[in-house]
Image (cartoon, rainbow, N blue to C red; front, side):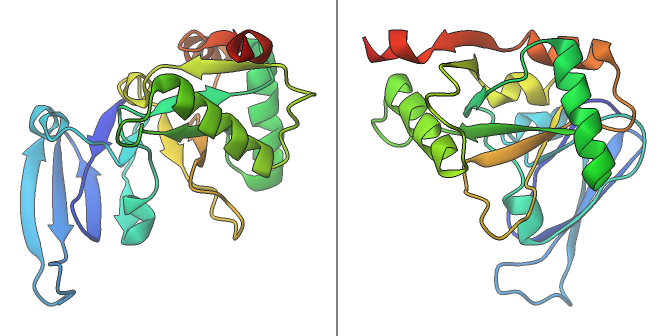
Length: 202
């Protein structure tokens, strides 16, 4: 089940079972009495091109409505994160979050480029967005960049919204699943490269 991707156009209910996905889609006019059902294979689903949720590990995914539609950036989104740096420290941070919320998650910022937006401009926009959440520029002279969210999605990592009232659109958490190990965070950390803000400014 690792890396299975869920995509729906419009509000939906989705359930993953075995190697296929059944999606019950509510038509655009919102008539919930008229559910359209279709089953995709994993390869057909991947060919759709835009993952909105990812299943990591065994189990069943249930998703409903706008929560699904907004839960993940597009595969071509850039992703940045800040400290902690090492795999062990990332795991420790996720474990601390799990003690607070019950979820093993790390915070990231991500978005796809807008029309005519360069990569540098997108990175600058994500860095400015992070400052709105309290990430100090002076206290975080370095950041870590993953060139494409899709690279994380295909590895089975899920992007989720934390759902608090002030959460900005660019903020996501990466869910590490249940009982992640340092091997899991090593794989995650390896997808990011360090960048220096001062060098970016020059």
